[in-house]
Image 1 (cartoon, rainbow, N blue to C red):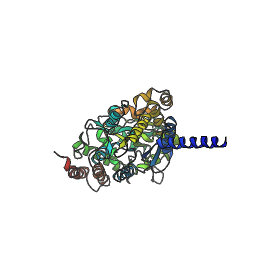
Image 2: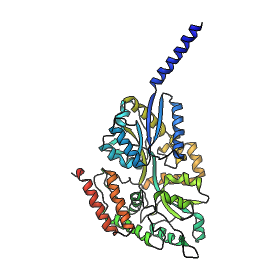
Image 3: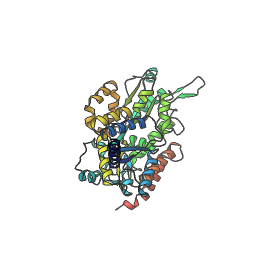
Image 4: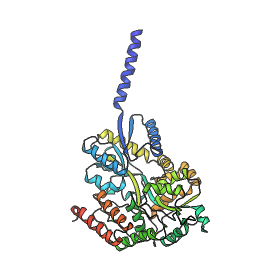
Length: 424
């Protein structure tokens, strides 16, 4: 009898080893520096996925900023140890294709007789290249205007009325700027971050003028277009006009903190900050689409899911399964509510979960509604170098080192040289 028990235990152990051997391990590179709230949300989704698919084990690797995540992904791919899946900038799609780092989704879907839902067309502009889908929208956003309603009321403004155009926004920003009795500045009317993603904020201004920064194939830029110059001149004028905008270069991360600390009455920032602000703000605030100069609109932003070249067919199949699960209506709604990013699957907005959320927080639908007027984020070959050229020009103009025209002409000249290999 004892021998039978030992044989049974051995049999069960062997079965467990065999089951574990059949399990597929996936690494998911994800662009956050530390395990904060968004990482917690991601882990919750991964735990749910592993419950539904116990034969797939997912390990998230928190890879720092988007730039860090791109560098780490390309290095891992070069060293022959790529993750199966990565969330990287949608705008870096050309860089990833040029590095032969990613696999088009059609290739894996065809091999596995699989499919994916339809996504918002505006989100696919930074996802499809040359007729192939290289990235699947995941944590995507647009730029929004936020304002403190109490400060509007204090200034005699309608707290429920957002500025409808750039001119009105500029005028209101001046009204909202405050100094103490010692004439020390204690509150700015508006803050638009000038570091980190300055090119993205400028693109919001350019879109509001009906202009573009690049062509559809990522081979040309239009930084010296008169409308782009005019948009940057508007930003410079706001910067220099009555302390409505801080004189220093405002850091990307500082803007939302200044808003929460009552140091600015309005701000431009990503829709991806909305949930965090709703949780932390001790005051009532409004959210609106970007005010333009004759137009509405914003560039899209954020990250896509990419399948990495160099992984096994089994890993690619499992990674595709994870992608399908993440972008299903229920799970993309869950991610959107917890993170503030757009629910990329339109069907998510018909779920009971999302309907209940929007009934409580109607502003959570604004970023999605703005997609109707959205343009693709600045995306070219050698994208990091090209955006750096534009960021440098913006800083140079805002700090008064160069005129907007001179700075943008210089940026355009740099971009032309960078993109020269793609000119035909």
